Image (cartoon, rainbow, N blue to C red):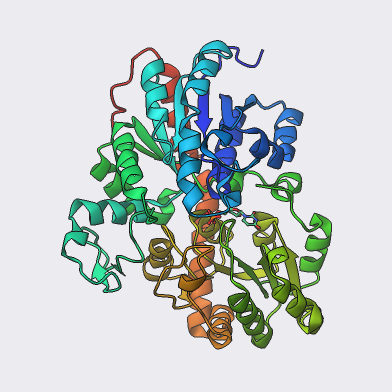
Length: 491
Ligand code: UDP
């Protein structure tokens, strides 16, 4: 059977695309390395990743996708509201997290009754309740971050040195303490990862559950930020395994074309279009899974791309909600750019696109997954952060790695919040694109730095690479030390 002698890891992703996708990659990788994986999901989320589930089956990978019914109705969530990207309002976000926490007992029951006893639980950091599961079952619990150690360390230091106690103006830049680099952010940009009303209590719970964790798994790699990884590990006093870039391992198109969700564009059409473009000439524009770009901003982006004269792939989400945008696109824009612009309305096969040799630049919102995908494919980026960890990720790309051109937003804007969405004009979009694709000395140097980083990323995942070795260590550690009820993993 599936569980013969194999170590058994239970993976509990947060139901948000930016959290589920890397954790599914982690599941596939662990399974390919001989671990039995139980990936905890819900019916709606499982339906989105059906092709991945099929892929795992076809490859006979030892993964069980465990569908627990989502108790959203108990907290007044609409039917099918099982993923952060479909939660309709900010107010309902709290309910969403409360609903997830109700999965504690069902998960414990499942693990007791259905499978071989787990060797460890790897939980998204947003699930403080899995700490109770781990202590009730007496198994070690690791937390998983698809956030870089640079950003985790900044966040940790800001809180440790109580920086916000002295801050009166949330838009006044301060220098992040305890780093070797001089990194400037504002409180508004780096509020801790949640800043919505009612989140302080949750943030406290998260910290406690983080303290209680037996170790930390991070989607990053040594060649990117070795010093920050080490400092973060020392600051936490816990073992940190960096095992990324997690996506890189899966090169087959059948997986990359449907990673995260079914793409709304045919993979062959997309690849054919890219094949027809010159190497490194295309700009890929996408703002992740959560960001809803407002109509006026969206049109400015389009006009900036048009003015740049560069070929582009532009991912647009939720336009069905805006008749104005739909009309604007169909009454001229799409036709004017048809020779060099590919619009994807809905879910894009992002890593398939980024991996294509025609792509030479990426306009990104700096979600960590997108950022590490851009880094790994070796291309420079225009950074356009919106909220959460994204402004700090921008600092890493722009100030530390020197492979980014900032679009210049200073204030955060939460998706769905009309008044606070920062407004960037078409001229700024055009200017950033020209800098990004610049053939001059500065542009070439930036491209070269990005290319070197990409090579390091690829090396890290190969046999003998740092992330490959870290994963081996992690698997062996939890296969051998099962009986020891976990104190803490030695550094
Ligand atoms: N993604 C994708 N197609 C899309 C939008 C997003 O494949 O149309 C993937 C992207 O490759 C990344 C993830 O979804 O792996 C988004 O995560 P990220 O951390 O970049 O941003 P978030 O969505 O969490 O803001």
